[in-house]
Image (cartoon, rainbow, N blue to C red):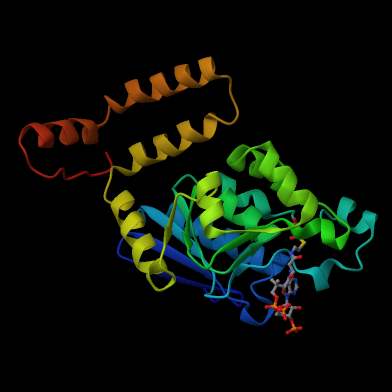
Length: 258
Ligand code: CAA
């Protein structure tokens, strides 16, 4: 598949998607998001892929939705045509883990896109922000919803109301990113994490993702019940038998995704 706005490659069982509009700091337009959706869906369907990495450039993961493309839209354009963010939630339908590897700016839609991933590994150069207020608008792809869940109401209000950026250290303290790595080690470290995940039993990996995501949609009681049923169902897999047998035999497990 030939893409114009992204670069796609695989490293063993890891699928890598790099946003690639360097002149516009990877500003996100409909075409890019369509291509991203296609690439993600293809990796999700590929039995040889166990984890996906989404990354940008050294300077920017993505500097937001494409301001030039949306500057002259009317309410009717965006409401009736559902322009700008119509195809953004596609990433939430991906069942395999998606890691965001973020260096440089992750602003507006770029920050929202990173938050749609399952976790964020940040280079020490990463900067996160929801600056839409400075453009006379508000976050439109989950910024006011996912940011408070990730970093608390106080910090989300601060970020969305002042439009200020958060550096990598503050983002890690606040819980937005899982870890910070040196900028020149971002892909190497993210690949180690992705390869580790891809070496596990894929159906069980998918259950972990599904169960953690339910934590944001359910009461604690319902979520614990949901988790328990998934836990029980792992006992119907060959991989659970193999994982526990390998532990007892003091050898590494050989999962077969069965
Ligand atoms: N859309 C379109 N083009 C963008 C862009 C964006 N979001 N962000 C940067 N660019 C373009 C610039 O226009 C510039 O293009 P030209 O060279 O053709 O002039 C190029 O990328 C480089 O940008 P700068 O010269 O501004 O680079 P800088 O290093 O001086 O500043 C920056 C970097 C602080 C990220 C600055 O570019 C910036 O503030 N960008 C806009 C960030 C923003 O407001 N994002 C939110 C967008 S709205 C949104 O995302 C809505 C939503 O929730 C879905």
